[in-house]
Length: 103
Image 1 (cartoon, one colour):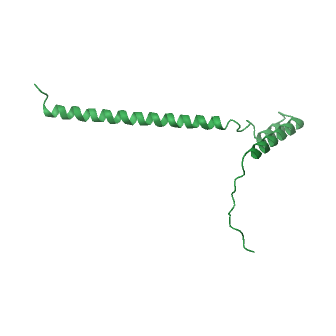
Image 2: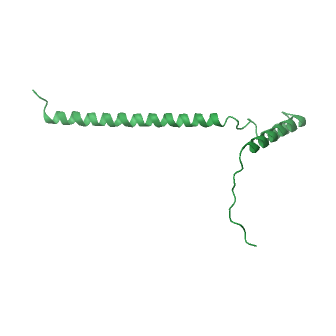
Image 3: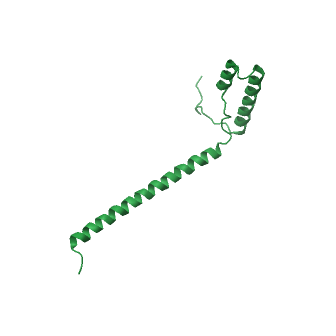
């Protein structure tokens, strides 16, 4: 005895919905893993990023008395040296127009 045609059609539709939902879930999971990996790689590549303090933070610490004037100058000079070193290591990017101005 075979199943009635209506039952077979309902089962087929249910299987299609389950397959579509499973595919959608798989795509979402793969996309999430790709985003996670890209963010992690970005953090790894930018490991020479910010030092944790900005010059503004140092100024606030100086103003509130958390650090002395000599500590401020030493930290400021170290930050400036680090930025100069990083900018010297990176190639210059041309931002201006290549057209010459007419006199």
